[in-house]
Length: 305
Image (tube, rainbow, N blue to C red; front, side, top):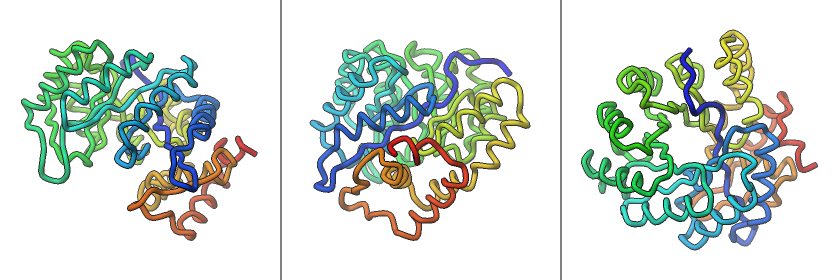
């Protein structure tokens, strides 16, 4: 396998809330410390699994400051900057760079179900962020509803110097990763899997060099990726098959609430409060998740005990 400059496991940090609904900044620091101890290669903040759509602009800026100051260079930090308005995206990128972020992640511009940027507008927004001078990960996520065809992604990679990484989590991710890597060559410096690693083996076989998972079990997923990249596909396959029930339950039943449920059970945070209109995790769903987790003994369940 051709080694890519960006690789490994770069999970998304959840945003903990107090029972009052306020952001738990002390809890956020503990989450980040746990993730470093989970042997991650980087941490992403303010992503969809961080509940960025439930966080105010002021909270977002404070979380950026607190996270970067607390991680303090122990691992690289990616700051998500997605927004429909290009000026706001650029401003978020400038703040991230100023505070020492390693890179930024962005989806295509969209707002709601119907307001979507065209291919040209998407390229222009990414180009404007590129002028800030910080590496960019393009997130190809179904949440945006914006199609990002491979020729557009390759054009960005080849013509916008700061576009380095691509997180592909659309339907048929492996096929798209394979096509992207073949068409873009060396310009695709970090082809990443996403969506909680639900298609990780297929994506690694297609050429992915890393994955952006949730913060639930990166200590168990990381060895799978490292084994694969080291050339031991059988060890990777064996490890992945062992933890796939957890990944499946998280992806299909829990969503971002799964990590918080485990963080609470492990004493990392004191509350897994969900801001309205997100409903709390059902007790049966929580119990099934914890049952699966206890079989594999991940760090998240014992770090805070």
